[in-house]
Image 1 (tube, rainbow, N blue to C red):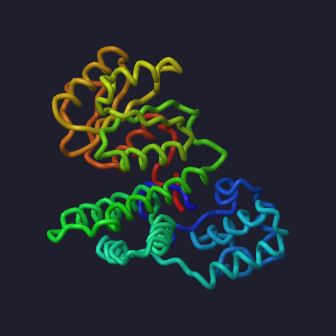
Image 2 (tube, rainbow, N blue to C red):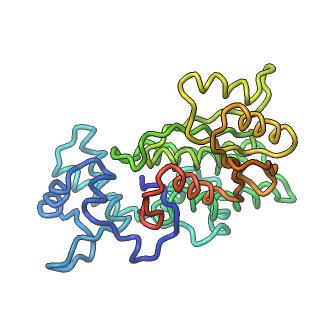
Length: 306
Protein backbone atom coordinates (compact mmCIF):
# COMPACT_ATOMS: atom_id res chain seq x y z
CA UNK A 1 0.00 0.00 0.00
CA UNK A 2 1.48 3.34 -0.98
CA UNK A 3 2.18 6.13 1.38
CA UNK A 4 -0.05 9.04 2.25
CA UNK A 5 1.15 11.81 -0.03
CA UNK A 6 0.32 15.46 0.54
CA UNK A 7 0.47 16.79 -2.99
CA UNK A 8 -0.70 15.38 -6.29
CA UNK A 9 2.42 14.59 -8.29
CA UNK A 10 3.27 14.91 -11.93
CA UNK A 11 4.59 11.84 -13.74
CA UNK A 12 8.17 12.94 -13.13
CA UNK A 13 7.58 13.72 -9.48
CA UNK A 14 6.02 10.32 -8.86
CA UNK A 15 9.37 8.65 -9.62
CA UNK A 16 11.12 7.31 -6.54
CA UNK A 17 14.76 6.57 -5.78
CA UNK A 18 15.90 3.13 -4.69
CA UNK A 19 16.74 4.40 -1.19
CA UNK A 20 13.28 5.97 -0.81
CA UNK A 21 11.55 2.74 -1.86
CA UNK A 22 13.83 0.69 0.39
CA UNK A 23 12.92 2.85 3.39
CA UNK A 24 9.22 2.50 2.68
CA UNK A 25 9.27 -1.28 2.20
CA UNK A 26 11.64 -2.01 5.06
CA UNK A 27 14.31 -3.75 2.95
CA UNK A 28 17.81 -2.68 1.97
CA UNK A 29 18.62 -0.94 -1.28
CA UNK A 30 21.05 -3.75 -2.10
CA UNK A 31 18.20 -6.26 -1.78
CA UNK A 32 16.13 -4.28 -4.30
CA UNK A 33 19.06 -4.25 -6.72
CA UNK A 34 19.45 -8.01 -6.29
CA UNK A 35 15.77 -8.60 -6.96
CA UNK A 36 16.01 -6.50 -10.10
CA UNK A 37 18.98 -8.48 -11.32
CA UNK A 38 17.62 -11.93 -10.45
CA UNK A 39 13.89 -11.61 -10.93
CA UNK A 40 13.30 -8.56 -13.11
CA UNK A 41 11.48 -6.62 -10.38
CA UNK A 42 13.17 -3.34 -11.11
CA UNK A 43 11.91 0.01 -12.38
CA UNK A 44 9.93 -0.33 -15.60
CA UNK A 45 11.40 1.45 -18.57
CA UNK A 46 14.84 1.86 -17.03
CA UNK A 47 17.55 2.34 -19.63
CA UNK A 48 21.03 0.91 -19.30
CA UNK A 49 23.28 3.20 -17.29
CA UNK A 50 20.40 5.36 -16.08
CA UNK A 51 19.52 5.80 -12.42
CA UNK A 52 16.81 3.65 -10.94
CA UNK A 53 13.52 5.51 -10.73
CA UNK A 54 10.56 3.55 -9.38
CA UNK A 55 6.99 4.33 -10.36
CA UNK A 56 4.03 3.49 -8.05
CA UNK A 57 3.29 0.29 -10.00
CA UNK A 58 6.91 -0.82 -9.54
CA UNK A 59 6.59 -0.32 -5.78
CA UNK A 60 3.33 -2.28 -5.76
CA UNK A 61 5.03 -5.25 -7.44
CA UNK A 62 7.78 -5.21 -4.84
CA UNK A 63 5.24 -4.93 -2.03
CA UNK A 64 3.34 -7.92 -3.43
CA UNK A 65 6.58 -9.93 -3.50
CA UNK A 66 7.38 -9.02 0.11
CA UNK A 67 3.89 -10.01 1.22
CA UNK A 68 4.31 -13.42 -0.43
CA UNK A 69 7.73 -13.91 1.17
CA UNK A 70 6.23 -13.17 4.59
CA UNK A 71 3.85 -16.10 4.11
CA UNK A 72 6.86 -18.42 3.71
CA UNK A 73 7.03 -18.47 -0.09
CA UNK A 74 10.55 -18.73 -1.61
CA UNK A 75 11.82 -15.50 -3.14
CA UNK A 76 11.88 -16.76 -6.73
CA UNK A 77 8.30 -18.03 -6.52
CA UNK A 78 7.18 -14.85 -4.78
CA UNK A 79 8.68 -12.78 -7.59
CA UNK A 80 6.91 -14.83 -10.28
CA UNK A 81 3.61 -14.54 -8.40
CA UNK A 82 3.98 -10.78 -7.95
CA UNK A 83 4.77 -10.26 -11.63
CA UNK A 84 1.84 -12.43 -12.70
CA UNK A 85 -0.61 -10.69 -10.37
CA UNK A 86 0.28 -7.18 -11.41
CA UNK A 87 0.25 -8.02 -15.12
CA UNK A 88 -3.03 -9.95 -15.01
CA UNK A 89 -4.79 -7.43 -12.78
CA UNK A 90 -3.53 -3.94 -13.58
CA UNK A 91 -5.05 -1.47 -11.16
CA UNK A 92 -6.38 1.73 -12.61
CA UNK A 93 -8.00 4.38 -10.47
CA UNK A 94 -10.81 6.73 -11.50
CA UNK A 95 -10.07 9.94 -13.34
CA UNK A 96 -12.53 11.90 -11.20
CA UNK A 97 -15.15 11.61 -8.47
CA UNK A 98 -17.89 10.90 -11.01
CA UNK A 99 -16.12 7.72 -12.11
CA UNK A 100 -15.68 6.62 -8.50
CA UNK A 101 -19.41 7.20 -7.97
CA UNK A 102 -20.16 4.87 -10.89
CA UNK A 103 -18.04 2.14 -9.31
CA UNK A 104 -19.69 2.67 -5.91
CA UNK A 105 -23.13 2.28 -7.50
CA UNK A 106 -22.07 -1.00 -9.11
CA UNK A 107 -22.60 -3.02 -5.91
CA UNK A 108 -19.23 -4.76 -6.37
CA UNK A 109 -17.34 -4.39 -3.09
CA UNK A 110 -14.07 -6.10 -4.16
CA UNK A 111 -13.94 -3.94 -7.29
CA UNK A 112 -14.61 -0.80 -5.24
CA UNK A 113 -11.79 -1.61 -2.84
CA UNK A 114 -9.44 -2.36 -5.73
CA UNK A 115 -10.24 0.98 -7.38
CA UNK A 116 -9.64 2.84 -4.12
CA UNK A 117 -6.28 1.12 -3.67
CA UNK A 118 -5.30 2.15 -7.20
CA UNK A 119 -6.40 5.72 -6.50
CA UNK A 120 -4.25 5.87 -3.39
CA UNK A 121 -1.34 4.45 -5.40
CA UNK A 122 -1.66 7.31 -7.89
CA UNK A 123 -2.77 10.22 -5.72
CA UNK A 124 -1.95 9.32 -2.12
CA UNK A 125 -4.30 8.89 0.81
CA UNK A 126 -4.97 12.55 1.56
CA UNK A 127 -5.88 13.52 -2.00
CA UNK A 128 -7.84 10.31 -2.50
CA UNK A 129 -10.05 11.43 0.36
CA UNK A 130 -10.37 15.10 -0.54
CA UNK A 131 -10.65 14.82 -4.33
CA UNK A 132 -12.42 11.50 -4.77
CA UNK A 133 -14.02 9.91 -1.70
CA UNK A 134 -15.41 12.96 0.09
CA UNK A 135 -17.14 14.51 -2.98
CA UNK A 136 -18.44 11.08 -3.99
CA UNK A 137 -19.95 10.56 -0.54
CA UNK A 138 -21.68 13.93 -0.75
CA UNK A 139 -23.08 13.03 -4.17
CA UNK A 140 -24.31 9.61 -3.05
CA UNK A 141 -25.94 10.92 0.12
CA UNK A 142 -27.78 13.64 -1.75
CA UNK A 143 -29.38 11.23 -4.25
CA UNK A 144 -33.07 12.27 -4.49
CA UNK A 145 -34.27 8.66 -4.85
CA UNK A 146 -32.52 7.54 -1.66
CA UNK A 147 -30.53 4.35 -1.09
CA UNK A 148 -31.60 0.71 -1.42
CA UNK A 149 -31.90 -1.13 1.88
CA UNK A 150 -28.99 -3.44 2.64
CA UNK A 151 -26.69 -2.08 -0.08
CA UNK A 152 -26.25 1.62 0.56
CA UNK A 153 -23.49 2.79 -1.84
CA UNK A 154 -22.24 5.47 0.58
CA UNK A 155 -21.78 2.93 3.37
CA UNK A 156 -20.04 0.53 1.01
CA UNK A 157 -17.69 3.31 -0.05
CA UNK A 158 -16.87 4.27 3.55
CA UNK A 159 -16.23 0.65 4.54
CA UNK A 160 -14.02 0.00 1.51
CA UNK A 161 -12.09 3.21 2.08
CA UNK A 162 -11.56 2.38 5.76
CA UNK A 163 -10.08 -0.98 4.78
CA UNK A 164 -7.72 0.77 2.42
CA UNK A 165 -6.81 3.25 5.17
CA UNK A 166 -5.96 0.36 7.45
CA UNK A 167 -3.59 -1.00 4.82
CA UNK A 168 -1.88 2.38 4.46
CA UNK A 169 -1.45 2.62 8.22
CA UNK A 170 0.12 -0.83 8.52
CA UNK A 171 2.47 -0.15 5.59
CA UNK A 172 3.96 3.00 7.12
CA UNK A 173 7.77 3.18 6.96
CA UNK A 174 9.97 2.18 9.84
CA UNK A 175 12.03 5.38 9.75
CA UNK A 176 10.11 8.35 11.13
CA UNK A 177 10.46 11.91 9.86
CA UNK A 178 9.37 13.41 13.18
CA UNK A 179 10.38 12.50 16.70
CA UNK A 180 7.32 10.56 17.80
CA UNK A 181 5.27 13.62 18.73
CA UNK A 182 1.95 12.88 20.38
CA UNK A 183 -1.06 14.24 18.50
CA UNK A 184 -4.66 14.17 19.73
CA UNK A 185 -7.47 14.20 17.16
CA UNK A 186 -10.82 15.27 18.61
CA UNK A 187 -13.72 14.57 16.27
CA UNK A 188 -17.47 14.46 16.20
CA UNK A 189 -19.20 11.52 14.50
CA UNK A 190 -19.74 13.12 11.05
CA UNK A 191 -16.00 13.79 10.67
CA UNK A 192 -14.59 10.51 11.96
CA UNK A 193 -13.36 9.30 8.56
CA UNK A 194 -11.66 12.62 7.79
CA UNK A 195 -10.02 12.50 11.22
CA UNK A 196 -8.73 9.01 10.47
CA UNK A 197 -7.19 10.26 7.22
CA UNK A 198 -5.31 12.99 9.08
CA UNK A 199 -4.28 10.58 11.82
CA UNK A 200 -2.94 7.97 9.38
CA UNK A 201 -1.06 10.62 7.39
CA UNK A 202 0.61 11.95 10.56
CA UNK A 203 1.31 8.44 11.83
CA UNK A 204 3.00 7.75 8.50
CA UNK A 205 5.54 10.45 9.30
CA UNK A 206 6.16 9.12 12.81
CA UNK A 207 3.59 10.84 15.04
CA UNK A 208 1.85 8.93 17.84
CA UNK A 209 -1.81 9.70 17.12
CA UNK A 210 -5.01 8.99 19.05
CA UNK A 211 -8.58 9.85 18.05
CA UNK A 212 -10.89 11.06 20.83
CA UNK A 213 -14.63 11.35 20.33
CA UNK A 214 -16.19 14.72 21.04
CA UNK A 215 -19.64 13.19 21.36
CA UNK A 216 -21.36 13.24 24.77
CA UNK A 217 -21.66 9.56 25.72
CA UNK A 218 -22.87 8.64 29.21
CA UNK A 219 -22.16 12.16 30.40
CA UNK A 220 -18.47 12.11 29.36
CA UNK A 221 -17.37 15.08 27.25
CA UNK A 222 -14.43 15.65 24.95
CA UNK A 223 -12.60 17.50 27.73
CA UNK A 224 -13.16 14.56 30.09
CA UNK A 225 -11.60 12.19 27.58
CA UNK A 226 -8.74 14.58 26.95
CA UNK A 227 -7.95 14.73 30.68
CA UNK A 228 -7.63 10.94 30.71
CA UNK A 229 -5.55 11.01 27.55
CA UNK A 230 -2.97 13.50 28.92
CA UNK A 231 -2.19 11.17 31.81
CA UNK A 232 0.19 9.60 29.30
CA UNK A 233 1.69 12.97 28.44
CA UNK A 234 0.49 16.28 27.04
CA UNK A 235 0.41 16.15 23.22
CA UNK A 236 2.44 18.42 21.01
CA UNK A 237 -0.67 19.22 18.96
CA UNK A 238 -4.44 18.83 19.09
CA UNK A 239 -6.59 18.72 15.96
CA UNK A 240 -10.30 19.44 16.39
CA UNK A 241 -13.27 18.70 14.13
CA UNK A 242 -16.71 20.07 14.89
CA UNK A 243 -19.00 23.04 14.79
CA UNK A 244 -21.24 25.09 17.02
CA UNK A 245 -20.99 26.43 20.55
CA UNK A 246 -20.13 23.10 22.17
CA UNK A 247 -17.10 22.67 19.92
CA UNK A 248 -16.05 26.27 20.57
CA UNK A 249 -16.33 25.73 24.34
CA UNK A 250 -14.18 22.60 24.06
CA UNK A 251 -11.46 24.45 22.14
CA UNK A 252 -11.49 27.34 24.62
CA UNK A 253 -11.24 25.01 27.63
CA UNK A 254 -8.35 23.02 26.15
CA UNK A 255 -6.57 26.23 25.18
CA UNK A 256 -6.94 27.71 28.66
CA UNK A 257 -6.03 24.53 30.54
CA UNK A 258 -3.17 23.11 28.45
CA UNK A 259 -1.94 25.94 26.20
CA UNK A 260 -0.98 23.60 23.36
CA UNK A 261 -1.13 24.41 19.65
CA UNK A 262 -4.45 23.47 18.05
CA UNK A 263 -5.67 23.17 14.48
CA UNK A 264 -9.41 23.45 13.94
CA UNK A 265 -10.60 21.87 10.68
CA UNK A 266 -13.63 22.63 8.53
CA UNK A 267 -15.44 25.43 6.76
CA UNK A 268 -18.11 25.43 9.48
CA UNK A 269 -15.71 25.13 12.42
CA UNK A 270 -15.93 27.80 15.14
CA UNK A 271 -13.59 30.76 15.16
CA UNK A 272 -11.72 30.99 18.44
CA UNK A 273 -9.49 33.98 19.09
CA UNK A 274 -6.21 32.61 20.43
CA UNK A 275 -2.65 32.79 19.11
CA UNK A 276 -2.39 29.02 19.67
CA UNK A 277 -5.48 28.12 17.63
CA UNK A 278 -5.26 27.92 13.84
CA UNK A 279 -8.27 27.37 11.60
CA UNK A 280 -7.98 25.55 8.26
CA UNK A 281 -10.61 24.55 5.75
CA UNK A 282 -9.43 21.17 4.44
CA UNK A 283 -7.85 17.89 5.50
CA UNK A 284 -4.82 18.40 3.27
CA UNK A 285 -4.23 21.89 4.71
CA UNK A 286 -4.39 20.40 8.20
CA UNK A 287 -1.75 17.76 7.41
CA UNK A 288 0.52 20.35 5.84
CA UNK A 289 0.20 22.74 8.79
CA UNK A 290 0.67 19.95 11.33
CA UNK A 291 3.89 18.78 9.67
CA UNK A 292 5.10 22.36 9.31
CA UNK A 293 4.70 22.67 13.09
CA UNK A 294 6.09 19.27 14.11
CA UNK A 295 8.75 18.88 11.42
CA UNK A 296 9.69 22.34 10.11
CA UNK A 297 12.83 20.89 8.54
CA UNK A 298 10.81 18.57 6.26
CA UNK A 299 10.37 19.40 2.59
CA UNK A 300 6.61 19.10 2.22
CA UNK A 301 6.89 18.94 -1.56
CA UNK A 302 8.97 15.77 -1.40
CA UNK A 303 7.87 14.00 1.74
CA UNK A 304 5.53 11.08 1.22
CA UNK A 305 5.36 11.04 -2.54
CA UNK A 306 4.51 7.73 -4.07
